Length: 228
Image 1 (cartoon, helix red, strand yellow):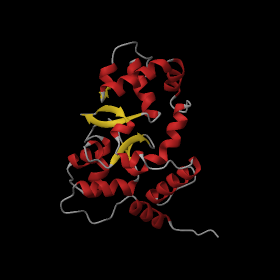
Image 2 (cartoon, helix red, strand yellow):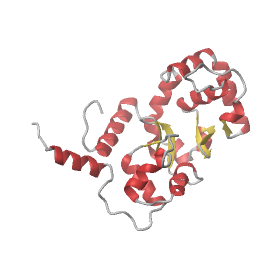
Image 3 (tube, one colour):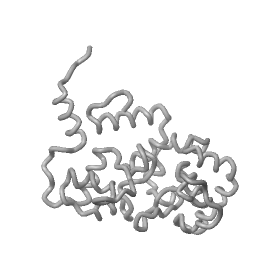
Image 4 (spheres, one colour):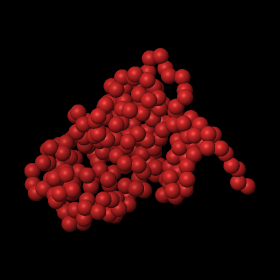
């Protein structure tokens, strides 16, 4: 049976699902940011900086004048609740969702990622393995620690081979963002960067993980099409 709703109702459902229309907290802090990201499911990270960097804006539109440090602590602090990976784009997501993306990490290891990075992975796997071994030996690193070497073609943001290796390892889930220096990622082995309680969670089958991700997306969107 098909049920029809009005455009006005659809808009109200979508806005409510996205956390609009709620009473704003008098003193928004980390717990409010944490709850907001759980409700949204994902917050896109972006270097675009007009009023402020894009990932801070959802909090302002829903919580009011909240401290940006609250998001930074939840995302990159020592007791964080969020992790970085490819959601819709480069994104912050609740830490407990990490197992739902392991199928995507496995696919990335098999070459399902940006074409240029996938090609680099096929051609320079020994080099990538060496970068991974260096991280295991040294601990947290930045792209600047591997900045020497040939640069990519235009459209690759002039990435060095070291940066491309880090991106391949990030896609593959072997390393992740431990914290950030300003906007620069600090990478470490995933098993060192994430809490043991997350690492030890069972890995769901790919269909089960995808169904749960669809459920989370549907809840966050409120109203959506199949294409969404």
